[in-house]
Amino acid sequence: MGIEIGTNWQKFYTENILVYIKNLQGNPYLLISLIVDISIVIFLAYYFFKIVKESRAWQLIKGIALLIIVTWASSLFNLKILNSILSTIMNFGVIAILIIFQPELRRGLEQLGTNKFTKFFGITKDLETKTKEDVYKIVIATMEQKTGALIVIERDIKIQDIIAKGIEINAEVSPQLLVNIFVPNTPLHDGAVVISNNKIAAAACVLPLADDKNIAKELGTRHRAAVGASRESDCIVIVVSEETGKVSVAKDGTLIADVREDVLKKILINNVVTKRFTNTNNKKTKLNKIKQKMRIAKTKK
Image (cartoon, rainbow, N blue to C red; front, side, top):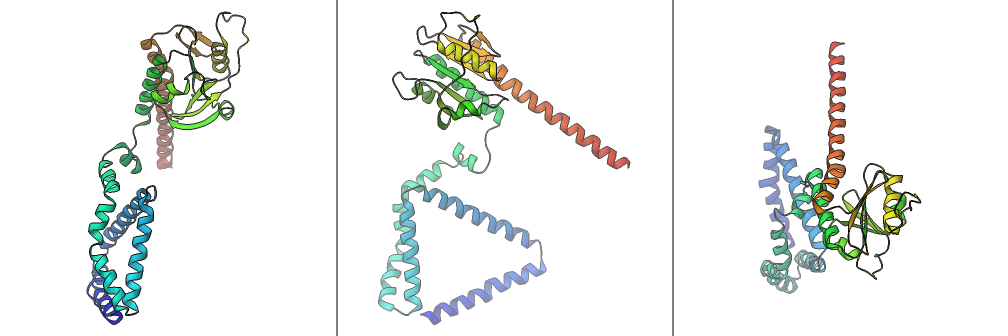
């Protein structure tokens, strides 16, 4: 059996590998297709093991790999009875794998073209679009929240010191999560939620209180905290009153009280989306102009 395997391998080497190498010498462009071919195979293998490792199928994969090794070893050492049994099992292996991995295969096929699949390939949503979606989610959560809330949206000035004082979450922005965080008598109810880099970075964060005498006395701790945070950085802070359920927005140390849903959406879009990406695009345009001038100067020299 071992001699037969050696003969088959020599035949495969002569008829396939050597022929391919000769063709490669005659046509170097085949090297590009070879590199692409190998890269795709490695990528697919990595993606397969990445999916499998996160599921219960990982233990089964190791078992199948062990079965293949034992089958090969039994053939190599001419253990005919064992090899015959294992070979019979291997013949039905494909059907067994389809049955065993049916949930994983179905999930993998369902992910084709979905957000998870496109994210893996780096085809993520445009950051501006995602930021707009996050704003809409925050507005939905704010309007559903009637028992008090304090949401801080970080902008250009980082507020890592505030985030560090809270409980790390690092989750995608979702209305359900934001609403659940502020459910009364839950561990994260007190304090503020901070949204940073399109993520819910932390909850139960402590904000600096404003001691401004101009702030109305009827406003509670949440409102003073919102004004204080917006004064120390350029963040936007949304406050939902626990007593009245009314929504206020703190910006640049000023409190805009009792805002409607459309007004809140407009404030957030203008300050969180428009200003951020307009400035970014302007910076990119200026940088491109500088690079272009440098190229022209080099050409003239």
